[in-house]
Every structure is written in C-alpha cells, then in structure tokens.
Length: 454
Image (cartoon, rainbow, N blue to C red):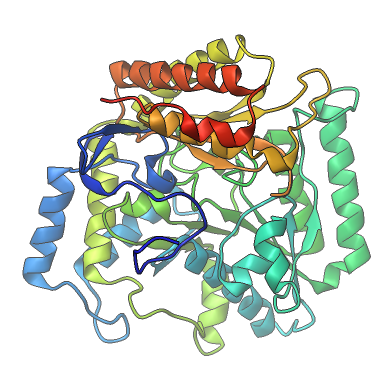
C-alpha cells in the first residue's frame, strides 16, 4: 500500500498527472504519454478542448444542476432530439444517466417493468454472453460474464443465462458461417431450456469491449440474435457503453450490421471524459407502456442535469463539425495496417481484430494452437507496463472469461491524426520488441527495465 488515502486496484504506484492536450498527457516529472486507449476508452475527443470547455462554462453561467422532476432544460431536450435522430427515430425515447453501469442497470429495470406492465411477471431472466462486461453495479454485474468480477458476488446477484458468442479466432468449425450457425443453435437451445415465457431480453455488446479484446460478432450472428429475440418475444438490449458515439466509425456499432435493438445504452464517449453522462435509447412503444402503468420506477439524482447534457451536446456537435466519423474510419484503417504489420514480426501475437478506432491484440504462447500464456505470468500486465515506460497508454484485460488469455486494446481518441498514429505505432513497436526479448526472462524482472525519458 502507498501513503495515498485513495485505493482502487492492487498494483504499482502510479505517476501523478500534470496536464494534457490533444492525445498527449504529461506527468509531474515531465514525461509524456500518448493516450492510446482514450483513458478508459472514454476520452473520445482527446484532452484540453476549448470548445467543450466553453460549452460547459456557458451552461454553468446559467445553471449547472436542476432535478429532472422539477424542471426541463434546453440542453437535455436538444441532446435527446439529437440522439433520437442518430437512429432515424427508430429509438424514439431517451433516458439520461451518468455512467455505463447505471445505463445497463436502467435498461434491465425498464425491460422488466415493461413486461410487468404487460401482465407477464413470469419474465424474470436475461441472456448474455460469456465472456462479456456490462457493469459493476449489482444488476449489471449479473449480466456480466467475467469470472474474477463475478466470484465474490455470485450469491447476491440475479445472474443471467450465459451463452457463448462466436469466436472467429479459436473456433474449429468448417468455416465461419457454420460456426455462427452452431452458436445460434446452441443459444436457441439454452433459451428454450430456460423457457421462452421466462425471458425478458438478450443483453449484448455488438462488438466486444474490454472483456474480449474487441472481438467481432458479425452480421450473421447479430441478425440471428435479433431473430431469436423476436421469435421468443423478448427484447434485444445493445450495450454500446464503449462502442457508441463514433468509436467504431459509425454512431453505434450495431449500425454496421443493420440491427436495430429495442433498447440501446451508451455512456463513455457521450461525455468524452469531460463530464459523466450516459443515455438509454428506447423504442417508443416500450416507454409508452411503462408510462401508462404509472411511470418508470427508477432514477438517479444527477440524471439529465443541464451541465451533463450541455457537455454531451457539445461532444456530438464536435463530432459532426470535424467529421470525426470519417477520421475514425481513415485513422482506424491506418492503425489496423500498422498493428497487422507489427503482428507479422512476432509469433506470440495470435490475433488482431476490431473496427474504427477500437482494436484488440491477443497474445498467445503458441500461435499454431492458440494456446494462451499461463495465467500466472500476467503477460497482459507486462506488455502494458512496457508500453507505459515507452510513453504509450494501452488497455489490458484477459480474453478467456477473465481467468486466462491476454490481450490489450488500442483505442486512441477519434481526433488522432496520421502522424500521431505513426508515433503510437512506433512506441508500441519498441514495447513489443522489449516484450519479445523478455519472454525468456522471469516476469518480475521486466519491471527492472530502464524507463524511456521523453
């Protein structure tokens, strides 16, 4: 333990941040870091933006906080309209929250109340994938399939029915279509075994986030899940907390696959690291049913406050004004090419996958068999530490249900420019070279390597 009164997760002492600008941050010792993961895949516009600051200050000069049951606010109404427009009004109602976990929590409560209002109280179960991540609050944790996070709380959560999603890297079926068809058949069997009349909805990340290292699910699979939800009369809930608001090159990842969910939640990129805000977008008929039954029995104090909504509105306006969806697609293609070129150098890079500016790199002990490194070696933490020493921030996790496998995410701000992508790849290349050299070294020795000075 350090002398700091703060505690988060176990790990080495952290540098103290000094300031940030664009895609760069500096610590109090003057060392620079390229933000290759947008913080927690949330600082989508980078750091130190004057336009976002101006919008926030302008709102603060009027009113920073009002409670949603006492006043409407112009920023909340305007942001609601803009979000509805992003889905061509197919999701016609919006409920604001402050975080991703709150967003998922709100979605599962709304979905449950919808069926309760319809006179179907027997619908009490959700379906989700293993692995997956949907939040840290108790309801959202019940949807999550990531063993280390679940283990202390399994007796306390209302767990979803966990089913596997497609794994286009490790599967041994004849081809990808056969693999998807088998996974869908297994999913149908699990839903039938649970009893279709007991199901509320299927909660899914259209493109995997931290728990899977940007694992792609594909159009065939996602449209198949949409069809299963329709057949069994349950809702499709898209968790786009991480992938929403432009991260994958479209406003929302499910738009890549022509899939419209019944409920969609997003957060991280909506506030872009400047203020906490998330949103739940819902089909109007669902909201109308719930409101006719006495209203949505849910809420949070800061939900939809004027300052949060003014920030979110300024973020969306910046994305449109600067054509950042196109920049995400172009810089994403550049980043993909660079990552794949790096992967060719090392047989321990098993898979590179992603979309837009959301990319995962999976590390394996044996490329031919896809065998992961032994979990106790903590290779995902080691390569992340090496990258940080080289002035690059990446985002590590374990690929296989949180208990094995290693990957890291590369997810820079949507504002990143071509030369900055080159710098990111240069710093990553040095870290990967050092990692390669250290594979025969005891894991503890990696932290003794000299730190690069900026």
